[in-house]
Length: 515
Image 1 (cartoon, helix red, strand yellow):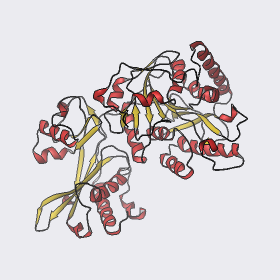
Image 2 (cartoon, rainbow, N blue to C red; image 1 turned 60 degrees about the vertical axis):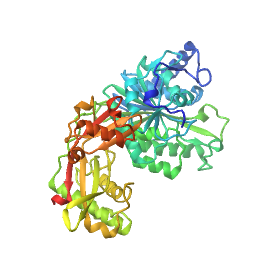
Image 3 (cartoon, rainbow, N blue to C red; image 1 turned 135 degrees about the vertical axis):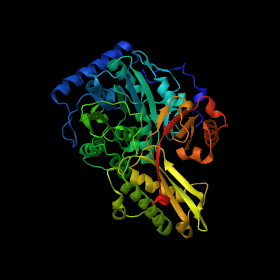
Image 4 (cartoon, rainbow, N blue to C red; image 1 turned 90 degrees about the vertical axis):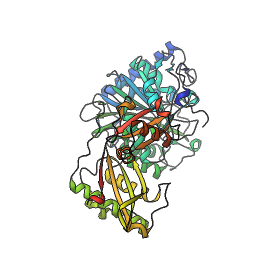
């Protein structure tokens, strides 16, 4: 899309004006404040009597502090009162910063779009963008920046007056989430965002739920609409409340439910820590506001997410998780990779669940990054080997057992540098697995320890990576390592010298050669 810009072209002096004030909500500050005050007061009174909506499965009263809220984004006459329940519930805490996630209604794209503006205006006063976080997020290929996309979109703007009225002049990180191709992209976006979530932060997801009727080309049922819509929205909520990302993705695939903020909600589910749960504070539809339109309906849910441990977001450990695991785990991972390779090359399929049960352990079921490398051994000279494929996940987006299987298949069939492995080669293939710690940011390329650190370089929306062993294998010093990273990213060899950012990770290597 032509409206996306690179980091080098950013100008953070602009202000995003309130484009929908005066149409979707009041533009006059006094009238708007009065409107919001009425909504919030009614929500407060109702929550005192009934803290959650009755009749929904997996619905529990929230604890404090909140991790996130989900709020609708229709015109205030339709959804403002429902939205007020989410903000009233969050009112008792004063977040230091708000990560604001919403969908795009006007422009289609993959990944997420960040603003170029440093300030978002509301009739009640401006809100300041956390420019440092936006600049760092823009380095990742999943994130891009566009002023135009943000100017045209209403999903985030409809939250801003509530945010300003409820929390005052809090910093915001506005993110418009487009299409995410699969669960791994959802997990990857969540992993990246998780790095920046700190104690005292709050996530606000902007989303309406089911859009039903001929206006939205979605009519999965034709009778008892009110109850069936409630059941459909309730099923979506149950997946969110239960921290069930696979179930939520399958729900969408099975029902084609028209949740406009489906991908922002999916990212939220992936972000939430174990032990978190959702609370449906209030449920409503557009028919509550316009009763005469009985053919079309949009559902509005006010949700709050909290932790059973009664803790908010915690600063992520930047030391990186250790990869200490047992000899049995090491041998089982190699056995799993070999079984996957043989099964995929010979039969074109994955081994069955019963066949891989031997590799299950507490460690292998943790989400971890890993690379699988295939070498072809010369039968006449076993000490001589040639690279035959190498694919991996840098970020811990899947359980290690699945990561190893995925990347065994990837290295044998999807490494663009090589033809797919064939059956005749299997006896001569040797497998190495590198299990990675989570990437962590370093302040400068001078902090990289050559031979110990794997390195990811980010610049202008491009990235490249080398495992720790690569520099040692080729005899590179730090300067040569960074030059080769730049070239691998498709950038000039000296691109690392200015404007690049670096993550490092450590690796535990296991090899069939060592068995």
